Length: 317
Image (cartoon, rainbow, N blue to C red; front, top):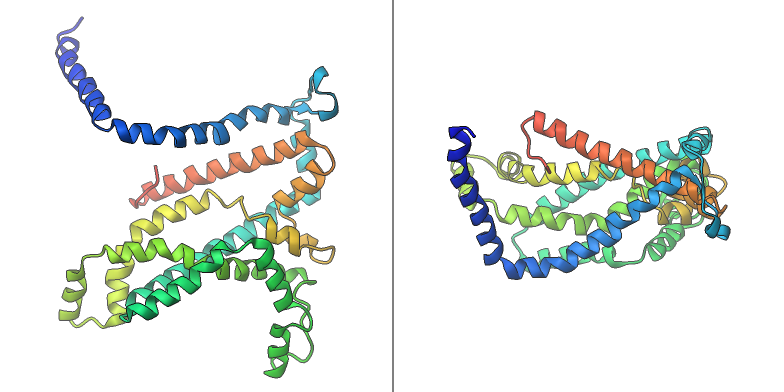
């Protein structure tokens, strides 16, 4: 044994002792985290064992005989289906639009509320904007369908303002679908998503605003040079997390508002799985679709984190 290894033994022992002391000092926090840890293990990691069925011909009607191993046949079937390729396009397109529009809307709302000095008005607006988050998506979609139907309020206002000559068929033309989804998501989630930005803005040192005012900066320049840099870390972490969820465009809006007229633009991977996997009894193909989503999401997450690290920005990992 070398002298260096002998000298490292006391340091390693002291390090282990420090770790155990920290765990003992925080034993109540450790105990409180056990239910959360069990929840994550049971609902997030245990289901990964089911991924094996993506490589098998799963038949739920005769599980006793087991499932035949078929390799990558389920994945081959998926990528030979034009509907699946189209659903990937729709999923990425809607997720990207929701990410861009939703992030900008949340930051703008947070900045506007942060600049309001009347606390009563500020709390009222904040409450009104985040309450839709608690509404069921079924209710929200029902409201949206009534608003955007051919003889609905939106078309009536456009015709009254002479912006259009005839009603626009919002729900029947696929070219409008992606943006309708973005509008619905922003209306429902903008208030909720702005909360974290507002809380970050409240932690910015007030002396920075005072120094900027002394230097002659107006309200817009204070926002540009103090507020936005102050929320940069939060923005980067949330951006990385959201990029990891780009394969999650949603299910409820697309399923409830989708029809034969806009299916080329409304069908996401989740809707595809529901239609061609679960409803048709092809569970192996459904699991293969979910596995594909998860693997791509992990790649996107680590890729975004790697790029942010290379750019010397705040990272998630």
